[in-house]
Image (cartoon, rainbow, N blue to C red; front, top):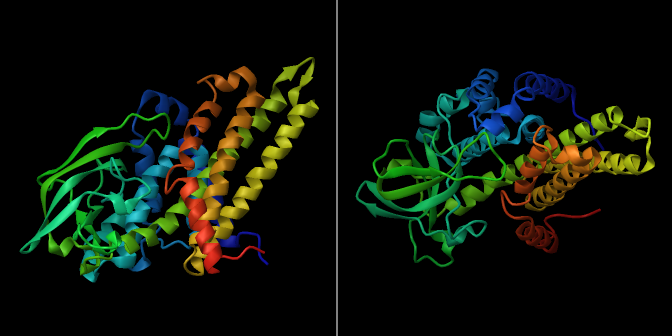
Length: 386
């Protein structure tokens, strides 16, 4: 059994770490508090080719394996989770187009998406439909050579920059079961009736925008139907979200690692009663548990990523997303406790880690919903424990 990264992956992780330590860590807290968009960091990621991590090499992308994909989000989230969000939604959209788009759609969009000249996201969630995607209300009515789209979307990352934006719609609202009437349309920026109405204020996950989108009689050519066939939208989205759960698990590991790093450094330099607090057994117990849980989460994330490489892995990615996200939250809380009163201050990193960690148990399907996904996978024998 292999529990280590190969040489290429180790070198890649080292390169990512250097980038994060140089370009993101020094500015993250200041820019996050100022509400400043990280334009310079985005440009640097373009230069590194990171916008092409799920794009095939034939279209100019890096076409990373799932474990290397996870490394990207682990390291970015260690610096600033919001930066990982900018790249995450884009990468899922690229993956969806690569896996399910027509040859014309791939040729039209993937080369520019790989370089970051175009950016994307994924339009799924609605005001009344989050994890229950079959409950969406956005419709696309076929009229000749185009669809007329009406509805709204919420919490859409990269909405102000996405061109195109894959949007999940109902092309047959009366279909039963509902997923057989769902499709994905690639809607280009500037299309009349397609409007980003507002940025939604958030507790954490700052640096990237999360927007509300209004679709009012938006005319979308039939050539923009992903795959060219109606009724396959749900399976297209779910196959992309499998990578999305690896993304969230890896982001969670990055948050947890940073929480560990901050707690360890603070415990070694903060003194009480004439000695570093790292010498106190109570603090040592917390540090020991924190380090153990971070490493366990990392192995779980890599295991799930490797499972994706070997085929459909709903159970494995669900397990990883659940476990890693809960480790991230607990790690940020434990790090805050090691910091004491300073952990509650916005002058230290740990309060941002806490705010960002909460989203990890909600995004890409809530943990409770994913527990049912894991259970069904176990019952069917698709995922095995032991």
